[in-house]
Image (cartoon, rainbow, N blue to C red; front, side):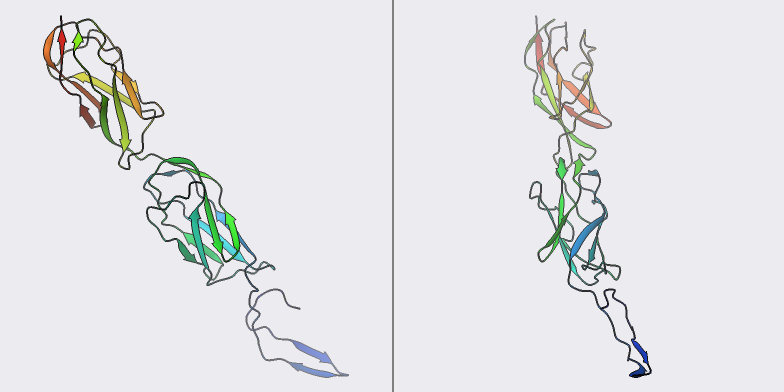
Length: 232
């Protein structure tokens, strides 16, 4: 019995009572697929960027690597459809299939990849996809007519990346641009929460006037509120 796959093996018989000779060379090829193993695991990935690369090793029951085998991948935590990438890769001469162009655009925790051929499966470790850089700010709760000396709003601002993922932990600053008015009191920078919302709830203007407008910004990304009046 030979359990290791090698090309051009020979068998030599040397028993003077029977026969002496050498066979023609012959190959021992791998047995059927027995196991898949993720060698290089996925790690935290930014939305819209490629995952990995992730590599999967295919072997028979004797540990021989299997080349030319098609391995498919799916995402199994959310049954997420990849936004781009090749869902089938073929093992090379070393038995490795390399997945190097899979893309997920939706930020979330605990994604997991499953690799399969026939009835043989293996799963990757779980990994997170985090938001890409800030692409847009949007005023959700607009300021309305306000009495001088009272707090405006509250006014809320949503921060998202280019794939509409909300971004938490981002500092959003505010200025008044209708009259370049310096607020009489209030916090001029608020941090987005887990829903990507920054809440401005203590801004105060003491001077009655029409056409005030709030300007929100972070690193070159800006948005403006509707105009509003402050009345006596």
